[in-house]
Length: 418
Ligand code: G3H
Ligand code: 13P
Ligand code: ZN
Image 1 (cartoon, rainbow, N blue to C red):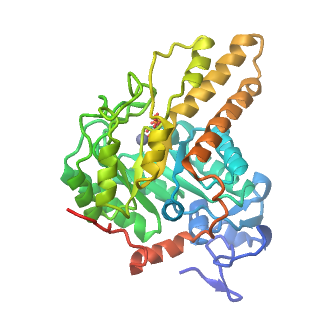
Image 2 (cartoon, protein in one colour):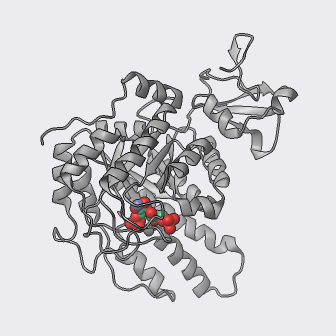
Image 3 (cartoon, protein in one colour):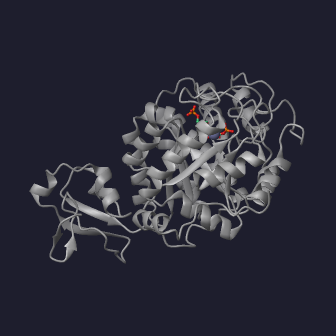
C-alpha cells in the first residue's frame, strides 16, 4: 500500500493518486527529490494512480507533473458500451507516431472511442516503450477520447504479461497457435494458456481477448497460413472455451485471413462464413465477438498503389456490409491493419513517383498520415462508433480489477442453448 501524506495517498514517486480532478489537465505540484529518485517505473506510476496518468510537462524531464482526466480505459469497458449502443469499434494497428496521429485525428473528427493495438512485431519494430509514451501523448492531447491500448496476437503468457506490465489496458492471448505463432494448438492447450492470462490480467483490471479456431494468412511471420477455411471455429468449442476461460472478448475464425490476399473474388457464403458467426452469437449472446482480418482491401486503395509503381495482384477483402452484418450479430471489435498499410503506401508512392526530386520525409509522411486518417474515419463511421466518445465516464483500471474480483464484472458467458 502506498504511503499517505497529508491525507493524500502518494505513489512511490511522490504523486498524489486516486483523486479525481474536475479540470481536464492541471498541475499538481512539485515532486520531492527523494521521491523522484525512487525506484518506480512510469508504468507503476500510471497503474498505481488507478487510471490517472502523470506525464512530464511538454514531454521534457521535469519535476512538475500534470494529471489527465480521461485515463486509458480498459477495452472491456469500450466493448460493453459498444454492446449497449449496438455498434462496433475498429481496432487499428500501429507501429509509429504517424499512425497513432492518424487514428487520433480520425477519432477527433468523428468523436469516436478508440482501440489502438500493437502486434509483437510492432512492439519490436518501434521499441514498445516508444509506443506506450506516444499513446500517453495521444491521451494528453485528446483528453475527451477514451483510448484502450491493446496487445494484438500475444503468442504466450510472457508476451501478455510484459504488455500488461508496460501499461497496455488489454491483451489478446492468441492461444490458437503455439508460441512459434505458426503451429495450431490443441483445444486444451489453448484453454490452459488463455485461462492463465485471464487470471493474471483480471487481477489487474486488464481485458483479455482469446481466439478459437485459426485465421488464415501469414503477416510478419505470424499465422498458420492457408485460406482461413482449414480451422473454422467450432460453435461447441466456442461455448466451452468462453465458459472455461472467462475471456472478455472472443475472436472467431470465419474464413478471413490477415493481409491483402483474402479472397480471389467478392466473397460469398462459401468462403466468408457469416452464418457461422451468427450461430455462435446465438449460442453466446453476451460474449463480445471479434473479427480479425477485416480489411476491406478497397479497389481504389489498390489502384493508387499500382498506379504509382506498385505490383499488387487482384484481390478482395471483407466487404463493409458483411462487417455491419457481424455488428448486428454480436461483433464489437473489428481489426483493421492492411487497409491502412495500403493507404499509407499508396500516398508515399504517389509523392515519390510524381516528385522524384523530393527527399524531405515530411513531404510524403504527411500525405500518408492524411490518407490513413481518411480510411480510419470512414471505418469509424461505418462501424457505428462515431459520435460515441463522450457517452460514458471512464472506469479506472483499479475499479475494473475490483469488479472482476467481486463478480460484478461477469465474464462467464450467458449460454443461450447447447
Ligand atoms: O495480425 C496482423 C496485423 O496486421 C499485425 O501484423 O504482425 O505484421 O505487425 P504484423
Ligand atoms: P487485416 O490484415 O485484414 O487488416 O487484419 C488485421 C488484423 O486482424 C490484426 O490483428
Ligand atoms: Zn488479427
